[in-house]
Structures are given as C-alpha cells and as structure tokens.
Image (tube, protein in one colour):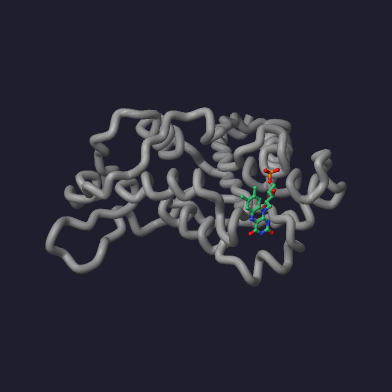
Length: 200
Ligand SMILES: Cc1cc2nc3c(=O)[nH]c(=O)nc-3n(C[C@H](O)[C@H](O)[C@H](O)COP(=O)(O)O)c2cc1C
C-alpha cells in the first residue's frame, strides 16, 4: 500500500460518458498501485448555488471558511482536504467547462481564499500547493483546438489551484461525437500512466 488517497471529481452530466470513463480508468490504475480512491459524481450531490453572501470569505487564516448553506459541499471539501491528489474532469459545453462544474467551483472559494468586506483583493489561505492534480476535459471539436481556443483547461487549472493542487498532467479528449462511448487505446494508456503517477 502506498497510502495515497485520491479523489476524482466528475463534473460531467453523463455517467459512463467520456469524462466519467477516463477518470474511472485513471482511478483504477491508481488503485492497482495500492492507492485508495473516491469518486464524486457532482450530479449525484446536493450542491446549491453560491449566494454571494461571502460569509465563507470573512475569516482570515489557513482554515477553510464556513459556508452558511447546508448541503453536501462540506463533506466534499472534507474529502478533498484529506486527499493527496485529485482528478478533476469536466466537458466543454458552450466554449468552457460545463455549468455544473462552475457551480461547484464557485462554492470552493472559501476553501482557499479570504476576502473580507472592504478589502480590495482576496488572499490565499495557504501558499503551498501540497496535492497533485490531473485535469481531464473533452469536446466534440478536436482536442488540440479546444485546448488552445477555449478557456476550459485554464478553468480547471484555476480550480486545482483553489483546491491546493498542482497539475502533474492533463488530458483533453477531442472528437467525442460518437454516441457509443469508447476510449481510444492512446487515451486509456495516458489515463493509466497518470493514475499510476498520482499513486506514486
Ligand atoms: C449543451 C452542450 C454544449 C456543448 N458545447 C460544446 C462546445 O462549445 N465545443 C465542443 O467542442 N463541444 C461541445 N459540446 C460537446 C461536449 O463537449 C461533449 O458532448 C462532451 O465533451 C462529452 O463528454 P461526456 O461524455 O462526459 O458527456 C457540447 C455539448 C452540449 C450538450
């Protein structure tokens, strides 16, 4: 056992879709290397919209700010807080990561930053990024095109930073326009390599 704990966050709307299948492949390779893994399918979670009340951002210091909303975010952020590595997967919808992923992202701000009323800029709660991250996205357009011409990967990188994680690899699946979801050998291989890296 390596003792590594890896949390996969899946923002896709489709179970067994491209994002879900890729993250599963990655987590499965990590488990083969002795890691413990958890899978958070955001659609299955009770996640309310941020209300912009900024309560979670008032208290300075390293501890995660408390949100006033009573839903599943607290337990999700606890899991992420205890993880050695995270995988974040989200499809490109309308030119950026999909709405569910952004809804989750907005609810993570108090985890990483504080920004009391009357102050000009937010401050990070912790400077060091101690977790590893792998970021996964997919689009109907070619992967190289979406990687360059959409902000999706940049959005996932911001999310990783907010969650205290440093990306060690990214995967962008392009041409995902077949009804039957089948990962190419190349993607499967890359996902498994990255999974092993997270478990190391
Ligand atoms: C509402 C909607 C908007 C989409 N917008 C884009 C887009 O802007 N660019 C693109 O390349 N693909 C777009 N797609 C295709 C999705 O990226 C693709 O279905 C998704 O990556 C598949 O991932 P999944 O199998 O995990 O659902 C869109 C799909 C939907 C349903």
